Each structure stands twice: as C-alpha cells, then as structure tokens.
Length: 196
Image 1 (cartoon, rainbow, N blue to C red):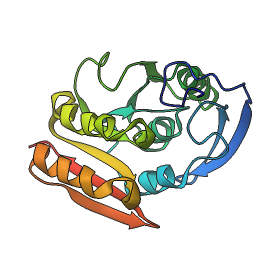
Image 2 (tube, rainbow, N blue to C red; image 1 turned 90 degrees about the vertical axis):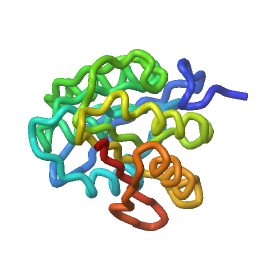
Image 3 (tube, one colour; image 1 turned 90 degrees about the horizontal axis):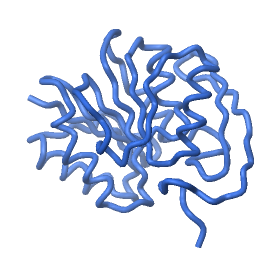
C-alpha cells in the first residue's frame, strides 16, 4: 500500500502543478504535488474555514497539518497574522516554503508530528485535520492545543459531519469546556473553542 499524505515521506510519483486561486478576495499561486492533501485544488473545507475567520491583524497563528500552505499563507497575507505552519509530510513542507515565498509571505515552516516540535504559544490554532490519519490524531490536535494557546486564544477546526465533526465537537467541549459551531456549509462544520 502506498504511503498517504499524512505520512512523513509519501511515495507517490511527483506530479507538480500550479494552482491559481482567489481566497478571501486575494489571488494566490500555489504549487501542489501528488502525495499531498488536495493536490488538484484548494479543498472546499479549507475555503469554508477561511471564509469563517476574521482575525484581528497582528496575532500569531499556528496552522497544524498545513499541507502545501493555503490556510496559513492566506491568513498571513490577508489578515496580517504571524504564521507558523507545521506538517509531518516533508513533500508538503517543501511546497509550503516555496508557496510562502512565491506569495510574498514570511512564515516559519517546519516538520512536526502535531505539536512535537512546536515551541511557544499562539493567539490562534487552526487545522483542516488529516481525517484519514484516524480519530486519535484529530483528538490529539484538540487535547494538546491548550498548552500552545495564549489565554483567550482559540482553536478552530473544519471537519465534515460524516467524517467526525460530532465527536470532535464533544472532545473540544471536554477539553475547553465549550465548543461553538460557527458555520455549517455543505456538511462541513467549523468548530471553535476558546482557552479561558
């Protein structure tokens, strides 16, 4: 069985392509490749997540499972966030670095299995989590988030209802004491919890 996009070194043959997309009213160019998540287009869930976020400029943001970088890069460029992007997939990280540079964005991009290599705290943590990696990975993103959030900071996830949004919401309520569904769109739920 071939290695998936949520593994360190996917083994799919390279198929680099350039995606030209408009996100939050701004045009971007992203390189994508086989072996990374949503290689043919910025997926609908990521678009719904971006459309649901309205961060005050100047915050610090951690994008967990960043893939080739569309979320973090967009929020850095359009909403003025200081962005850190992490992923376990080395191919995705290489693309994220190139994509940040191509779109004129400064970002810290490095390999990390969820939070393993992350240091410090952030105003915001976002993730379009790797559902196919399993519930344990999604729940780890939730369970360990408070340690990496400033007081008053928030965790925002996008998950399809049929792919585990209800269980993720329950886990966020367990860890944070509350969870708001800030948007529903074509089966995608945007879930947010704030660290008290």
